[in-house]
Image 1 (tube, rainbow, N blue to C red):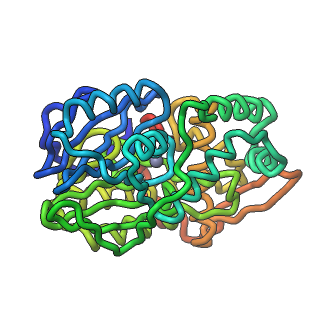
Image 2 (cartoon, helix red, strand yellow):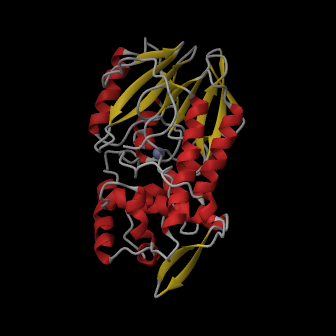
Length: 369
Ligand SMILES: [Zn+2]
């Protein structure tokens, strides 16, 4: 169990049952949908406007989520329609029902440019087979052909079924710094990056709430990964920069409405805790690379449990994201030998910076998709 040194307050003693809603701020309602994995739920939100409702995030594909949506529509909308659907980012637990919801209500989809197109690419990629770039990415980081076979099976599990309507063919773009009106309240669009390329959060100053998606979560840390699609990406640097940006923008009094676990107070402590967590992970990696190391051999330093399938994909991606951030800081160098990458610490001040006994335990929390 990872310990993050911070104190968060959780104001709600219960969470809504599937198919029900719970008011968490004036006109803002919390609902949950099931997820078929160790992280077993996602939080979605409904915001009441004067003439209709805004849905924020949609749940994963499949009949079970659709059935819960129908129950909510029958019991919780007070006779008003849904008039827009917002997805914070591309991941399938957030966008899986976007096609269903926008078709049912003939309502527009609102997303950032980067997330909308990334969703369309992800939908079509699931139907493709493997290619040499993907194989090369895994081989260079120390994984074998067996893992590539596992990945092919996993991809087929995520392929949308015909009854899961695809992401709509049009959308309305949301950009960082814009405001949208819902009812009488203005909501600021704040964009973060690292977990996904252009993740939207919705911040309402009047109500003192932020719907944070996966950008700010309590309890677990969002997966920040290099992926085979962008093998030289540097998402960890973007992630840390986003947290610094959000620290400047957000007052500590606001209620954070996250996509997983419970709403909480303590945003400043949480943002700093997440920065400290990743800085600590990077110091661990640096200390582990005094002798040259392959990425896959570094995983036990970061994750307590054995990783396989999807969790290996995300765990390895996160390890590489940390290593790439260290490379840009000139604290690690990488060499390619026999088509495998070796990472080695190069900072002469490493011994001075290292603080024995400071490190958190390896991570044992469920991972995000
Ligand atoms: Zn996500």
